Length: 174
Image (cartoon, rainbow, N blue to C red; front, top):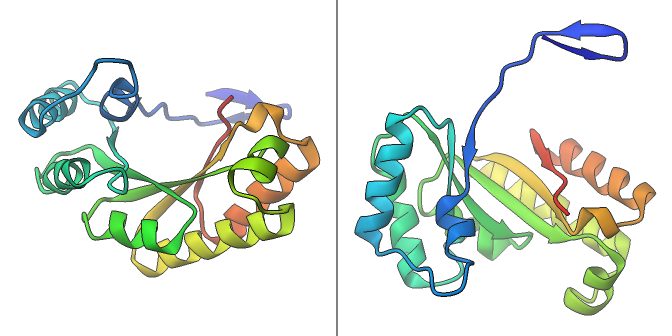
């Protein structure tokens, strides 16, 4: 139970593992597909609820690993990361994952220099990607990348629009 706004709420803690996605971002770290399968089987055995399998848009090898992981018949929910692009969502959906984690850089530097879009266009991209993922039968987590440097009002707005479009989870990373 947790206390929110002076009200007790029944709260369930779920464990999410990012070893495959975040782990391979460390210099010199790479896993073969067989190593990834061994890792996810062990994670599933110890009761991890959600496993981030990777971003299938990065490479053919990662896509194949994500696809094979999703076919393992694990108890854990399998997630694929993808940018807020319809083509990325379609590629992730083709791997038969349970959920996509759609991300978009929301801070001013990301909007201005990385994706070269204004706030309204960013909201449109996120909403379209989420709606497309829903049409593919996927569950969706929206990740507001670089959230701690994002204008607070815009951050709340884009997260609200993501929920309106169908995201059932919101991630606010720094």
